[in-house]
Amino acid sequence: MALLTILEYPDPRLKRIAAPVSAFTPDIQTLVKNMADTMYDAPGIGLAATQVDVHKQVIVIDVSTDKSDLKVFINPQIVAASGELLGEEGCLSVPEYYDKVTRAANVTVSAQDAHGKAFTLEAEGLLAVCIQHEMDHLKGKLFVEHLSSLKQMRVKTKMKKRHREMERP
Ligand code: NI
Image (tube, rainbow, N blue to C red; front, side, top):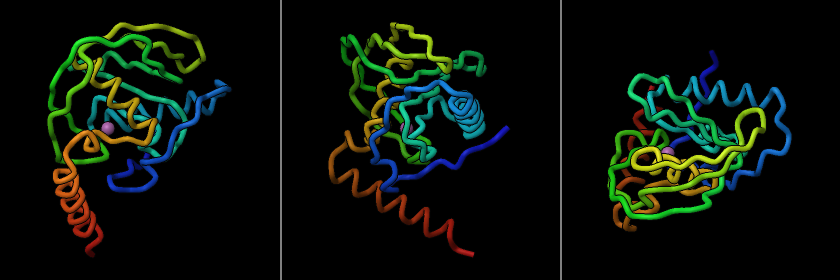
């Protein structure tokens, strides 16, 4: 098991745009495995490769309560979206901060699995929200960037304080 380091806001590397995966090599399967291990260890319900400083379009998600439903999305595209859902979100890159964000309530996503096999999935509720949140990461966007600039400033201050405390010997 290999745990990867998760970048934290406002690290500028979280703003990088992820490139599509074109070759489904063993490296990609190892990345997926390590990302899943890192997500479960955190613990979290979703992780985008951007968060571990790998700028490829790779996402892992598991919204089950018993860690039994790992979903892998490579090169994801939202092909349909409907409804609206205001839900509380958090992010492993913004620890200990939660806030409400409006998302589509239902999404249809096309993606590839770790071996390059294409699939389409219809998602609703928490899974739909999680897919949109993780896909934002691949575009260099964090959930806090959906909030007001005042809130973003507060989160940034809170995170800087956290990082100062972590660096203290
Ligand atoms: Ni996140």
